Amino acid sequence: MTTRRFKLAGEVYEMGSQADVTLRDFILLEQETTDLGKVFTMGDIVRLGEKFNDLTPTEAKHDPEGAWMLSATIWMAMVRKARQAGDNTPVPFAAAIDANLGTFEVLPDPADRQAPAGKARKRPADSAAGAKRAAAKPSAAH
Image (cartoon, rainbow, N blue to C red; front, side, top):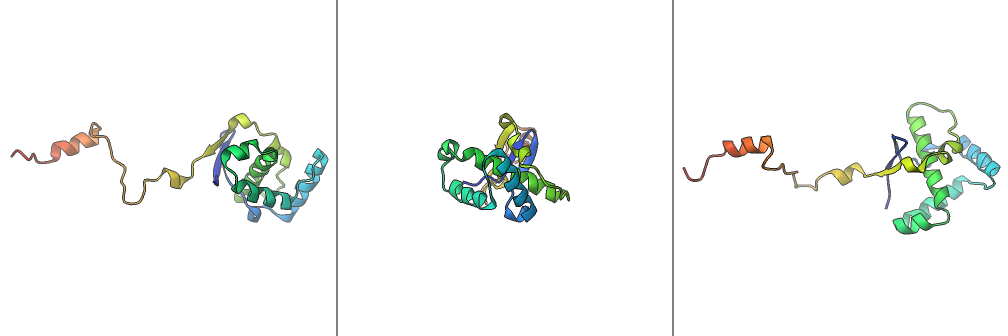
């Protein structure tokens, strides 16, 4: 299960990756988390990403490292969004851990919202367009 997008405080984010984060970002992350009492490194993020990819949603929710994984996910997405906007200033890890989780919402992937190949979305027959099409069809009784 991989989530690619989420909304936080009304803003949509795409998942970040190591390619979005500079070495400076990772070094500042280590420094900032050391000040919090737990060193959190690039290796920790990679390890947690691999671990959480193999967990069910219920297992992930109850995992003792879940808060760190969610914080890393939010932080990397914030870094990605800043870089895509041309902003190369450091994104503090504090921005991720200060996020109000009541505003966190996982968004479905765009592919999940598309009809399967060969299956068109049907309109209800009682819609205005459906009624016009039905009226335009020749009757079999004629």
